[in-house]
Amino acid sequence: MIHHTCDRCKRLLDPTEDLRYVVKMEAFAVMEPVKLGDVEDDRDHLLEVHEILEQLDQQGTSGISEHLFQKLRYDLCSDCHRKFIKDPLGHKSTGQFDFSPN
Ligand SMILES: [Zn+2]
Image 1 (cartoon, rainbow, N blue to C red):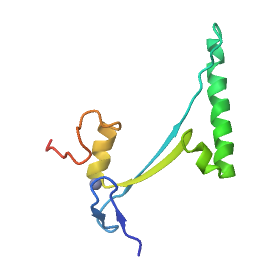
Image 2 (image 1 turned 135 degrees about the horizontal axis):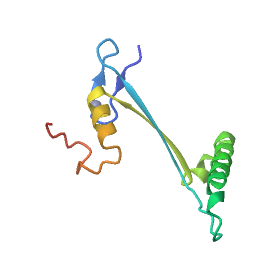
Image 3 (image 1 turned 90 degrees about the vertical axis):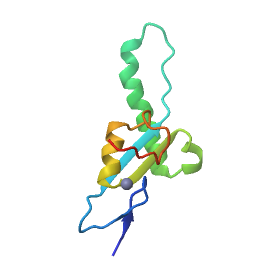
Image 4 (image 1 turned 90 degrees about the horizontal axis):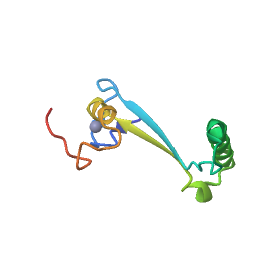
């Protein structure tokens, strides 16, 4: 049987009792177009960059593209999931394990 632990509070999740939330994040570098007066082109350009990065990802060039593109995956318990959704970038809490009662 596969046991999962919460990646935030390290609590062991019991599959028969605990809901497990999977959080997937993608962080990728975006190069903004420098041309002046060409703002409408923005969207296509972003799409293009994303496509290039996807191709890089498929080719498995992990070492090179690591700084440009990262895929992250976390298992969270319901408590940590709730806190994550409220504050995904950790602005409100000073530390990762700062669990102040609400
Ligand atoms: Zn947790």
